[in-house]
Length: 206
Image 1: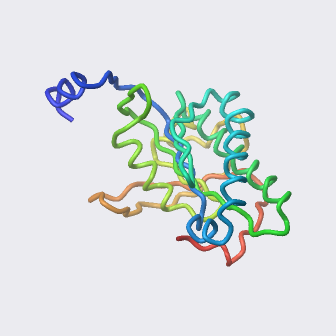
Image 2 (image 1 turned 180 degrees about the vertical axis):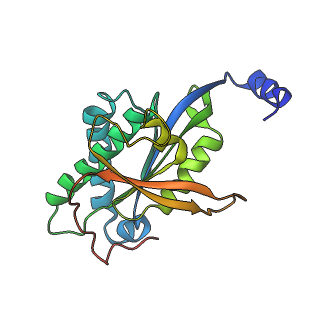
């Protein structure tokens, strides 16, 4: 965006540029799940969003920008807080599913990008948000996919081993082509170190 375009935008809306780590969360197969049990899924999701805000975002200084019908858009001041929150959200989702053993589990996928975004009083916009969405589309059920910038933000230097407050495994997915971007993006799959729950074949994407 040019300085002229930014000035014109700022004339109509109070905006600013700020560096943020953007976390996007999505329910896998949400259309099918809601079609099967609209009231149950929506009720569970609203309760889960409240839990995330209270128990995860506050300790990690996260800001819930939007609670979508089947996802969340969350902003953080730094990469480590975003990654810590993403891992905690996945773990909270696993616990919530354990309490719903008689019904199909609600599985989440996530994408994280960090960079300069346009901040308004009620939203965050820009390429960073778009890329977080594209990274999320690369994630399978129960997975978190992050950009090169996020991966580097977890290290003291680019080629160092990951050094974060939690034990994290990082898998290099290589250069990935995503929708509406001409150039591939380097993507990494991250998760807690150690054995992870097995996601069954019934967990399919929309």
